[in-house]
Image (cartoon, rainbow, N blue to C red; front, side, top):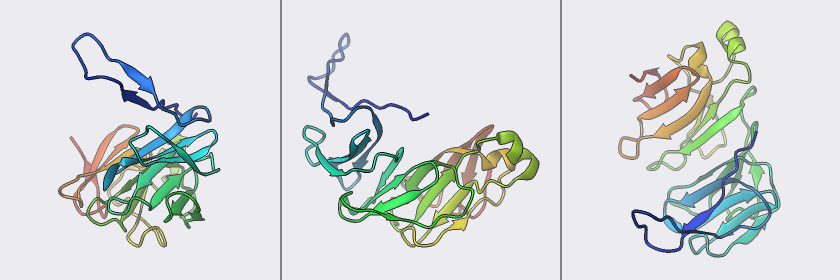
Length: 206
C-alpha cells in the first residue's frame, strides 16, 4: 500500500507549546513521494495522484512536470538538480530534464523496489534495495536480489548481496554514509546490515 505524505511548511517559528503548519500542495490528491535536491534545497519534486510536480521555491509553488503517477520513491542527483530517479515497485526511471521526460532503466529480474539511494560524492553510483513479497520464500530459496548497484547512472546493474543471509535479502531501507560513502547500511526483515566497500560485501550491523 502506498504511504501517504502530506507536504507541510512551517508558518511561524516553533515554540514550546505550538506547531503551526500550513499546507502548500501540490494539487492532485495524496502525495506518495517527496525529495529535495541536495545541491539546491529550494528545488523539490513530489509525486501525487496527478503526476510529478516540481517546485523551485521550497514548496510554495508547484508546476506539473509530467503525468506519471506510479512512483513511490524519488532520488535526486546530489550535484545536478535536474537529474531525478523515480521508482515504482518494479521499475526505475530516470529524467535529466527536471522530470519532464523519463527513460526506463534496465534492472535485473525479480526486483521488488523498497529503496533508491545515490552516492553523495559519486552521483553515477546508485543503489536499489529489493524487499520480499514472501520472506519465507526468500529464506527457503534465497532468490531475492537484495541489493543492486549501478556505477554508470543506471545503464548497467550488478547484484551486490555477498554476505547477506536469506532474510538479509529482504531489504526494507538503504542509507549511504554522507562522509565515508563506501559505507552503506541496509535494514532487512530481521536486523540491519553494513557494508564498508560500496556494497561488495555485507556483515551484520550490531
